[in-house]
Image 1 (cartoon, rainbow, N blue to C red):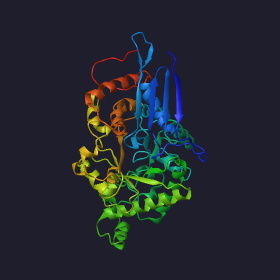
Image 2: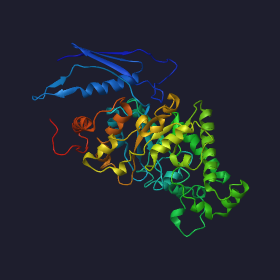
Image 3: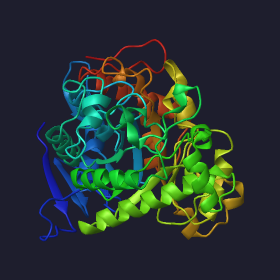
Image 4: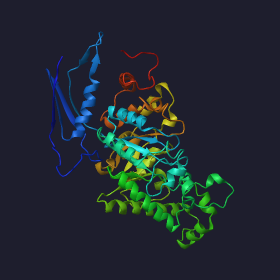
Amino acid sequence: MFVTIYLTITGGCDEREGVLRPSNTMDESYSIAFIGDDMSFTANEVWGILRGLETMLQHIYSDDCGAKIIRKFIVQDSPRFPHRGLMLDTSKHFLTIGEIHKFIDAMAMVKMNVLHWHITDTESFPYVSSTYPELSDKGAYHPEVYVYQRNEIVDLLEYSRLRGIRIIPEFDTPAHTQSWGNGYPDVLTPCHTHDKEENQILGPVNPTNLTFIENLYHEILSVFSADNHIHLGGDDVDFTCWQSNPDITNFMQEKQFDTDYSQLENYYMEQLVEIVKSSSLESGTAMVPIVWQDVYDNGFRSDKEVIVQVHKSEGWKKSVEEITEAGFKVLISSCWNFSDVGVGDDWRAFYECGPWISKVIPSCINCSSEKSTLVIGGEGVIPGDYVDDVNLMLVSWPHAAAIAEQLWSQERTSTDDFGGRLSELRCRMRRLNWNVQPVNGAGFCPA
């Protein structure tokens, strides 16, 4: 059977743009009409065509003889949330570019559009900086093997762009910076304690540190200029080391912070946000920072353009309500942490949780549409503690599709109905020779 496919992009292209890039405002809506021998795709932008092609592939089946069959269908579709992502951690275990490519392909298959790249952490600093080369020379697991060179990052950004997926990097501070100190020990706070594990936090009051951060982020924003969002981290700040340092104690007194070290964290985050915004404006792009929920919980209120990622599981529904009530945009990750997922039908917990405002926030049923739109989507979080090239796909897929559907679909179906479709997706992934796990007990994938 031969099918003639017609693609129509009604919005056209901005000739001033040298390269089309996915963004937080891209239009991913599309319609498909498969009637007779003609299949027509219509979308306002090319991103809608990409999403529609994935829908078309879902309608291709094999009959008992192995022949390919495309079912006739008509669909008009659009995403519920503009931000639908997954977080990858490449600090605790290094992930090769090839494996990240495969991961991005899986994301595209389920219409996800944001790869949140948690590049650095306490354990290693695999990003090769031209400004501060010893960050990776002494902070990576291996200065040549387990690092990401600039040309590799540029190629990865292009690979994801062609699939309509944004890459948002995260360089987490002020905590989780022990690997930074391997090459540049002066950036860390000198701890006057006996616990070396506490010496993992950046010094927030040293003026040279702010210069260091400013120079580094100027480079980072140049490398990752394809998107106007960047994640600044800000979680798990342990104040023990700061409390032990007399220079910080004196600074606290000068600023009249008393003994409230959350104010010191806010001081640092405000400086960091300003550095990022100022550096990005030099390149003509207004950068939007994203931070972990801890930053808001510790009192940050100064800039409503900052997006807050809610990741704590306890009381997360109330947190979403409170943060949006304060006027901040929110990403939800609280019930989508892959540390809580094992094997089999653990995907059910993912599917049965999500940012359904009228259900998870009862007092927000009658909220204005303005506040409802402050929830801009969410991300699944894949910590790197027990994940490397060997099991990345196995741990993540097809379970992550449960998150993807929650963030894309306007309506919910039953969990069992989704489970059947998840099995079909798993078989499609297996036919690509991807190592992804079974989801519904015993069974097989047709050839």
